[in-house]
Length: 161
Image (cartoon, rainbow, N blue to C red; front, side, top):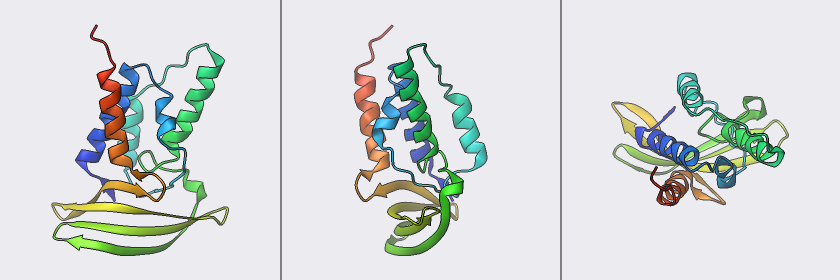
């Protein structure tokens, strides 16, 4: 599984807007829930994103702690690979809707602490390959739309240099 080009662009826009606006802690504010999708993006994608988004730590301890929390967000969500050691098993995949090259599926999985998690994925088939277009969380809605909305708001507050 890989994420779609639109989703990758939204992630890139979101992160770049955060850095330009000097609002690094905003990443963690989007959501702190762990969604360990080992199969969401490739290692090459994860490494490229992390290389493109260096985090500079200031001496202010409270900001440092917030950024540490945000780094956990990077690793505890579907964009940046979850903590793979937390993933125990995939319980079920159910197709909710399918139309030509698009589908919405519902996925349930268990973590190593025996808790069960679930969410919907919006899929799109491109050149015969299924890509994840969006993650729909039961309590937070569209992760893609949340990132895009935050990006627009953040970019509107950046003053030209």
